[in-house]
Amino acid sequence: MGNAFSQSKPRKMSVDTFFAIDEDKDNTISTSELETYVRRNSLRKFMIKQWCNRFDPEGTGKITLSRFCKVLGLTEEELLNIQEKLNAKIQPNEQVHTIESTMSVVDRKAVIETVLSLGRQGCSDPQDLCDKIKKQLDTSYGRVWNVCLSKGSVWGSISSIAEHYILFMKQGYQYMIWKTSE
Image (spheres, rainbow, N blue to C red):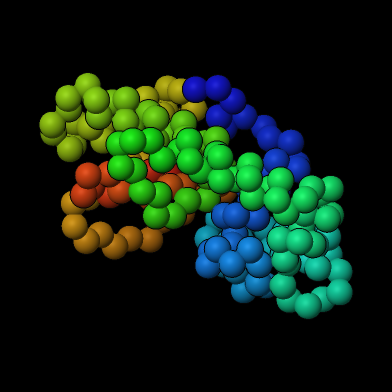
């Protein structure tokens, strides 16, 4: 499964993180979105100041995609094309819909491919499938992964290691997968 969950270069990590923080997908990160991302991922609050100093030195309270790209030496078109291509690869012809994720595109793809691969093996018992997914992720990417499979409503509050959470749907089932520290 390639380089999933390996150390990323700061630039790549920032690109993936920009899209994870931009909840309303308007290509602008508000201070509120940045604070929410830091809180949800149990990150140090210093990240807010770092990002604002680097990408919003004028103190507007908004980090635009344009400014973000300029700081990283990219064009908006380059960045959006790359993101679109990577997202298209994540949505295989098996009707997977990512609802929410803090993972990088590469990591999301690796987790979804793991789930799809195990699902193709004909596991009909949801608990058994959860156990197999967890075991495979623990083996491939280190402990401790958590897997929740639901058909219908689900509510919860979780904590995860930064950039190790995904919620997606496939054939009416919701898969919530996240990693916690040992």
